[in-house]
Image (tube, each protein chain N blue to C red):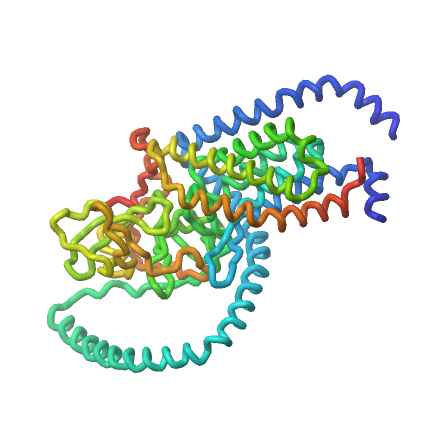
Length: 304
Length: 173
């Protein structure tokens, strides 16, 4: 056994020596080709990505489970220390909310009456699918998370992902059992929004920082920190009025938004089917043009 | 002990398996959301640690092809549009370290850590430059600096695990 492998070694040694010498340059060139190809053939790489994500999803879920368990254990102990203060705060908040509930009930009744009068067509009821975050790209390249639901849970590309606080992003890729959610903060995220007060339209564009920017807001529109931002509903992807965030800062004309949802700490998100179907299927998306670099213009992002 | 004997009998085949598998697992760890309570989800670049470790201690066991595959897997999981960037940077790290490895091997841990700091800073700066080049505008440096600090800070953990694996499972060459 040993002798034979020795003989084989002698025979293959020169070949292997050459292979070893060219392996590194070859692979480096191959990676560069991939980078270029990835830009040229978005579809192929999207498909590959979905395959890889689907294949690794069970492993990712298994690994992320203990990490989440440890974190929630620590949080439980932490919570014990603040339980008194929290209780106090919640009681006050509850009082305030009861008043709001009152107001909401009155408005609901009034709304129903008015709708009857105007024969208003109510939008279809939204369907929520809860999902666990199993991976977080965290890298500086992209802001997205993988969740453990996919085609078999009837997730469709373009659906909104929300938490109790507000909008998180939208479903960008769907595999059989896992999907990728593009966060609001990603470079490729462009969402039609409006100022809650003045109903002025703008586009919220991510730039991989924690606070996305507002684009195309007319300069004459008054805006100040603390203003609420909600989805505008144009583009037929998100329904109007989903809470998004508040204006965090206005610095030399750049308006930055602090999202309501804690994007850095996502554990559970809800993928919502609003029955809008405003996103084109992947196959109808033209490849990105060379101009302006990396922006893959997704119909889900199209504004106006 | 028993495993070591088995490995020798089997011609040391699992020897190459341990660096490969540990590197792939570290790639997965790079994207798993690790929650630090009271703090954001952190995702240090564990994959870089694995490549750094094995290139310095047992470069013959982690082939360029393995590094390439690990990089591709990382890119696919990260969801970056530029599949190949991590593969490229990890391959470059491997090549750069190979010439310096005798300097780092068998040195005390702080030296190893300092070497990793330089490597991580170089890699993350390289990634920043790449992204900026792709987008044709300088992107914000904050996320990159954060990533670098986090990765360097978590190096002792990754290094400890890899050293245990190396001592526990690998037959001495």
